[in-house]
Image 1 (cartoon, rainbow, N blue to C red):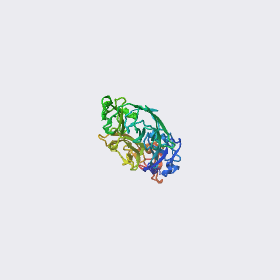
Image 2: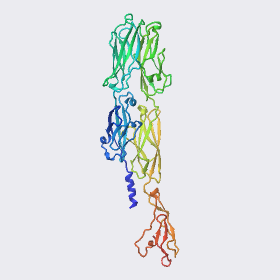
Image 3: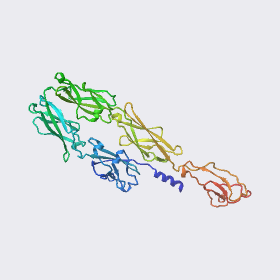
Length: 526
């Protein structure tokens, strides 16, 4: 009975693992209380709650998973850490956190996406409380002057939606769209007369669209100065250029050019970045104030930002100076500068040697943060091994499965080398080694070193004394290789000498229970 129930039990225990997948999505606002319930994953996936603990229901992916936890008793997904959308996703429109849920026996992998929606928890803010502008008295109506924009870490309707200018007789407000941002411009409507009024004090108000509405004020002081009646003019209102990432420092990006019809100092032009520039831009680019050349001074990385929008002002050297502005859009071109990354989730480091073809060993996830072909990855195994990679329904996801029969007695350990190579020029590769141990099953019978065996026994032997020792070996391991010995008894007839022999079941020592007589019995077998 023991000789066949053991292998049958092992084959049931380590049998074929079926891989099942699904994907669901939840939504929750930021700043909810810790412990707040996001959803019941087990219920939405139709899982039996009573089996969750035995099936090791859990989250298995990424460092951001600490934001959420799942209750293994009821399948509820809840908030584990404070959800600050601005810290997690900056000002991205969509704030999505991807989780990977695993249950076992049978193996199921489910992808859960949690969308964190924005709350109006920030008010607009100006970097400065006051701004002083100098405007010549002969400035023509229609002239525009860029004002500092307000910043609001919130997104969508909760970010800055509009600006309002306090009531006055000379100026209107105009707003330009620049991506998600809105840039305020002061527009002169009526000519200024310095002799009538030297200074104009205005209030610029920035408002978001949240409920309740939040706002911030900037005090504007407009100083009316005398005669420098031509402003510099750029050759283009918007300059656009494509720049490859990782270019050398001091590389020329573009040259902007403005002209001023005035003569002397009033016609000499100087260039400067707009006062509302992002600090990161100032770390990466320089602007020559005399030539208008924009050059690289920092490391340009496509994966950090793929486009930069610069505001450039041109001012003459008149007294007072007049200014104009233009936009420079720098689009960053990706190069293949990132190797693929391989993430391995092991189902079991021990694989039974009688595993069926297609048994899942590990889950392989491959990523490359480059774009286009530079970010497209091909994954393969190195060497002739009895395993193969099966693509998943999700791109760059694979299952490592058995493809050939395993035999522990032939080879008990495999070091599998996984290679991930992108399609860039030149291609970049990453290697990862996965160690797999083949566990033993009782698939070998014991073997005697010699069979049949002929032995000689001297007559008149002492009953109970050792007459011979036999030995058998088993290629299996541990308990599967442990050998016990026994003598097969007959039906007790006259010729059945086996009943007069005894064998030690542990070491194979054979002893006679009686004294034999050559004249009575010359030979027998057992």
